[in-house]
Length: 254
Ligand SMILES: O=C(O)c1ccccc1NCC(=O)[C@H](O)[C@H](O)COP(=O)(O)O
Image 1 (tube, rainbow, N blue to C red):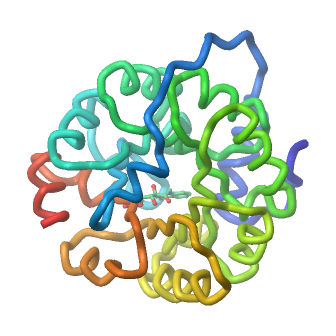
Image 2 (cartoon, rainbow, N blue to C red):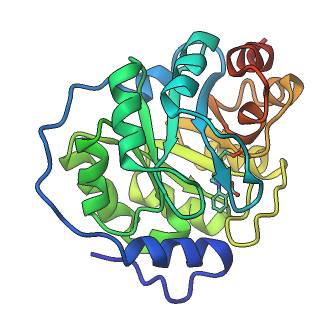
Image 3 (cartoon, rainbow, N blue to C red):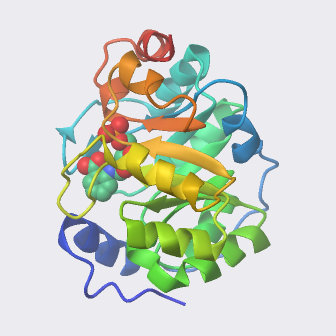
């Protein structure tokens, strides 16, 4: 059950094909009990998913940081969940980062990686994630099958879209937590109009689940503009660039 990655363009295709070449099943430890991702995002007010992001294709090296220290600062600053990048080549992440953060903070964790094989979902569960990212641009019509595997494993999924077609696929697949990425993952271009435009469309199509706006957020007024439509926002780079992660998150949330 692997998506055809041969035609996925740009940076996204390059990263995903590399990750697909590395998946190697191995015996997994028993999953820890983890807090609910969805419940955390539905708490009153706009919830922040704060991302531990050391580097990225668009920003290069962002911050040399211990993921545990970053996650603890995010927890003190009011994050409702923490996104932990586990992609090693372009983001400097690892499953060990996820495991160490799980042992340090009592918040729901999102495994942020380029899931291109069901075994990566078992890894997410075994290393302590509450949820895993499913990128519709990678999985396409397999999104529904991957969602079934997520549920079989007792995980939750953030199903990520960037276009109307991807939104249709996500809704048809039964996504309960829908992420709308302002960033085109193939070209890295960011347009902050994408999330509100597709968020309104999702609600118009009857989507009653959790809406998450992703990428490009740096100022409190940008988050205020999301209130009323979005339940949560995912922020990485602007926080990781701040001298004090806890203070930066408090200022962002207001
Ligand atoms: O961030 C990148 O450069 C990137 C490149 C290719 C694929 C994915 C990428 N980022 C993943 C994300 O969507 C962001 O890490 C996340 O939404 C946070 O965005 P930001 O606050 O802009 O760091």
